[in-house]
Image (cartoon, rainbow, N blue to C red; front, top):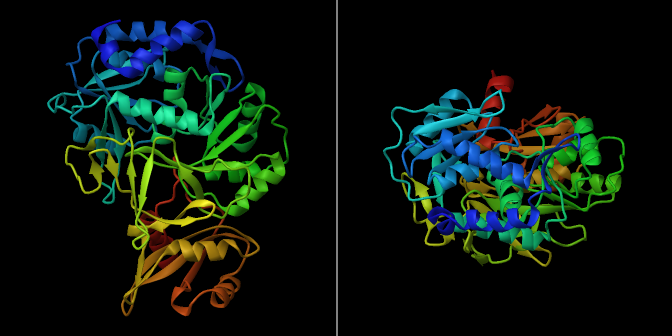
Length: 461
């Protein structure tokens, strides 16, 4: 082993995985064909090494791919060169990508080459910042301005171990990799288990329900980490057998009880909710086989210690997977010293932790703080409502008022009457915007801020 392979624990455990599983299938395509063996990944990484040799040591390097079979080898090659990968969503627009790379002081951007290799673009202004990290995850934070989170390889490995051990995922499993690999969820549940535990993965970008079901069936995938929107779409299809599937995991956004129930009725599989954050990896997981209340995410992951402040509803996350801090600016009140404070409001119940909204989502209605999650929970109990999102809109007299975006074939009057019956008067949305589907992004999230702007443009103008 080289010095870097000895100092980077992911490279060290990769060597043991490679020795054990060299000729085995590591990456499959959605049609079930073997795209890479573990030996193929190693050979490809050695081939990429030469292409990266002119980049300055310790420099940040943007990596913008889809769910591509080249990504694991590229990560290995970058780490062996002492470079710092920066995971970028494939859908990231050029201006946003430029801003993100600038924040990280990236020396280069690596993208797909259509001849099967990689394309490297040197960035003239990059390479000047010392990141003191092995990996950078990007987050928009609360202001929308991109910033990076610094991780050492040991922290990434600790998160992988917590995911695999808590969820019972091992080398005999096959992960179906349709969630974005560049996102913290996909990285921790798909890429590091492949490199550190030898868990094979299906590389897929497919989002159409029928094609997704076909891929799950043809590959014989046993583990499906998904997003609530994907499970909702699958639950609405005609039943199709998935005889090999044993574990379905939902993260990225709250899973509605209606989707969980409908999916279980269709496929006889429970969806297990997983709660995590880019800053610290996995936080909690619902391992039970029983139906749980909406928003329930179970108990703390293995190796994670949670400190819950009942009065404020906030939690502190402590554990070996928590990132070192933000980059370039730090905020130690939120992240640092093995501690992270998410912006989520959390309740403890006999079933486990329940997500109850976010601190910065509270709507100020004439001085009273309205948690939009409470209104959403109420709306989802109404027959005919498939999903709902509540957000604040300006009001000259009361500061803000709630408005609701609702998926379902109901009228605003029907929705209003239901809310009047089940909520306090000040909690009832002033308006109901009926849509065919919520505008989920690639990560399965809906931004309340963006939804409020869409409402202003489409409904109020």
